[in-house]
Image 1 (cartoon, one colour):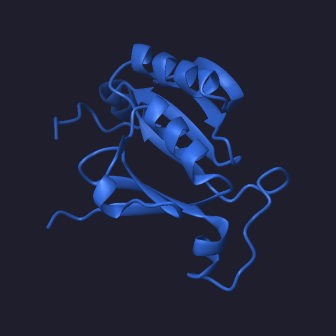
Image 2 (cartoon, one colour):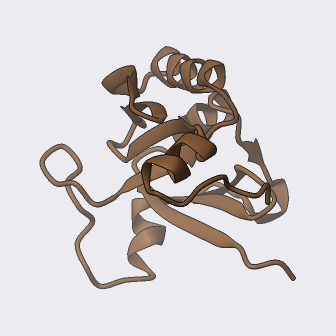
Length: 144
């Protein structure tokens, strides 16, 4: 089995959160979804688990962060082009998300940021890997 990451996110409304994640390009895996959780596939190795608050609290005794006042994490989603950065940010806003900052050029990176319906922060970025390596003094990067 490939190494995977499952990002467990507490959400107020599982159905609304599921619709948001579908709007930004995730695919719901019905095998691992029900009325208290949705398994949203971002890639072959990255899955967002959208967990209703009560279900999320069954995994931890800690209080759920108030994302209106507290930053819990910034999840960065890489994209294959500037156009894909623009597209996912536009989809997030159209689906009810909140723009943190519009996509912008930042040296060898291009990115923008948004919050989902529950205030979880996402940065979407495209990076010119060769320019990044050159800027870091590493020379050209071999494709993965």
